Length: 432
Image (cartoon, rainbow, N blue to C red; front, side, top):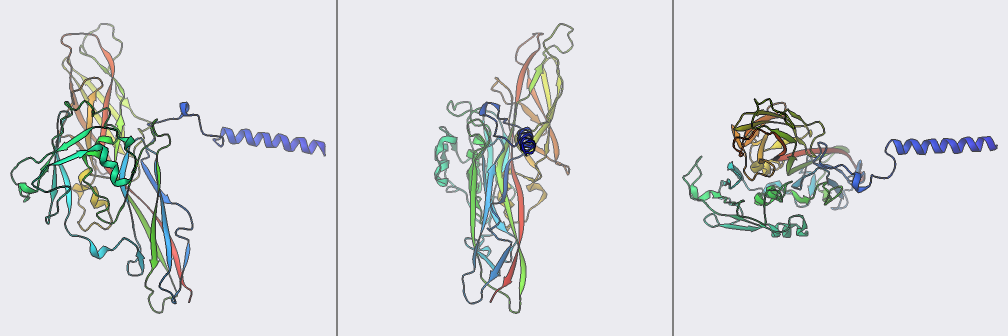
């Protein structure tokens, strides 16, 4: 009996040791937590099995056949995120979801078309049809204080802090059939904004501020604003969104049926990478150097679904050329930032190829140098059918006829919209 007791104790110790080895123990302390890795952004899922349940019953003797669809939204990537959750996939004649009425949708649409992005200025256009305008009178100016972005969400502004953004209308000729009165331009002078710079505005802060005119509520979305998994917010933010629904109508003669519930997650996100590169002003010199230019290969991701997979470098005595390779590895779809409202399953406008697979170069520079690099062929990357793309950016070496090579980070921030989906099926039976 005693030998059996000892054997059981030894077995228990082995199981405990094994569970710790396999990650079953407590989470790592903060100093050992890994940030800025992986390919996840904002994940979604049904919060629990009971909302909605796998089986529902319709009672014909009452107009109230209520149930809930509860969604968990978790930002586990390394960027701040602003987005919307949409519920669809069910028969709207049978199921009523409170707050969602497709018959009330407006047929106009607004989008943002960005002309160019530069370090000193940011250029872009609001474009609207059917007399729909965004944020202000179409002939006026828009002043946005980034501290007030959180007021609409009822949240603390600690994520952003201070800094003002000024948006002003720019005169212009009509384009694409849209009168100049309908075009609102941006003027954003980064160089003169000491309280708001690209370092502070990175990881989604500046992106969310500049595109605060986008509404995820316009087409029956429930908006969220979540911090990412960064040292200031370990683990990232999580939200729970609840949809209140009712079985409003039941076809005569029907005993049971199934209904699908699809949740669509549409959001703004950024990818931030800062690999160390070698700047060599004398690439043909045989003098001893601390480094030589070589490709960067990203193997662990940067805590975002769109990944900088590699940077190829070519040096001349006057320039360093960086070819930046990116890929969508998150399993969802990439959207042009200004067309992210079309991501809603209730958006009345037809989605085209030009609405998707656009990644903007939000920031690219050699660390410590305020000059934004010139990129070609454009300041955006169009992804191919495999979700891959590239852009070449040029750095003009500022240090005259020196021969010493040196190492420095090259900062790359990508801006884009992103969407993912999840779905479940429910069996509905007639009870009475």
